[in-house]
Length: 218
Image (cartoon, rainbow, N blue to C red; front, side, top):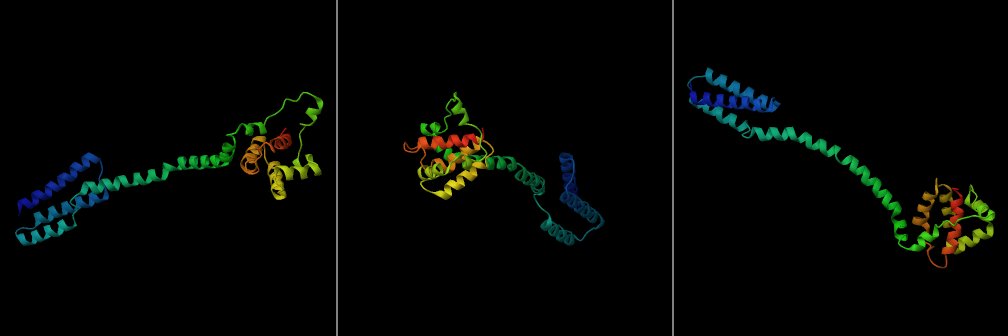
């Protein structure tokens, strides 16, 4: 009976016991290793002599034994945590970033136009005190109905550079807005800059058109 072989097997079993004390549990890999250690110890005690056979068994076992059991166990234990974080952490930030990107995209044209004081002039609201002024600011349900035929032709020519389709598209979009802020954002992003409503030649006409738009949400 080879005492040194048995002693090494006992040391391995002892190491597994220490590992159990540290972690409080054994993984499937550790359980399999412990079973192998115990089985090998049993075989070593049962077999006597035949040093060559024992040596071959030792070499065969070493080829399958992982020399660094603890690092492999740590990797198995920590890997699910890494995957879980990768799935959970980015969700809120991705939603927030996506929403912020959409808001920034919607406001980008408006911000660029606001660099001029003339932009603010377009949306100024004059204080109305007389009766005729109040009547001119009464609520309307459709911008088209508030603009006569001649005025429509004038608006298309002066504010939309003669582009009938863009005028119709703009009126339809404005009629579909829920409040004046939405209408203002649409005009800032899609119309004011494109047709240069801030220019000295167009600003007064644009102010009048915007007052009609404001009546839609009065």
